[in-house]
Image (cartoon, rainbow, N blue to C red):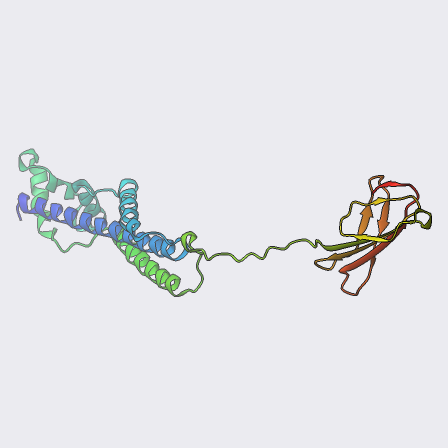
Length: 252
């Protein structure tokens, strides 16, 4: 085997291993893209147009930070480590014949028959390829599981209308106030449906209030800060009554 063919074998191994490394990282980028796409579609309802963006971004990041090209000197160093029969002389195949001294030429002649294209690849290359296929299998399995799972986050654009029941506080439905003036005034009893009351001194007033819903209690507060508690007139606590004698004429 001459110098050219020996150098050609090293270049062949270099190209072969580099291609396998590239394919390994490519498969890993594809695996991550599949996994992220499955998560994005299932949980966040992403648009499918982002899938190529994911792949390009992941692949670019992997090749920028992790890919390291194998050089001819790396091939010769591996051959020297893994093939003792080459006697640590694989690097001689990379030197032109004119630069080899007599002893180097003899060494090349002794070992060149032992250099073949069937030499195994470095553990690093095998490891990258193995991890790539494992990651592809794992991402595929996880993606299928995510697809089959019924649980998912609600899509913001498709949120169902939330039914809200507005709870209104109980209100006064009806007011009936009976004002009985004192006998000396000669005035008759009168009834009104307004809270503001004008009463003569000595009058007797009865408040009847009906609420829209049940309430725990009612208290009537006057302008002078005095208070009158109401008493429930039914079990539903929607009808209330209170009474008060008026000791001073005025507006209440």
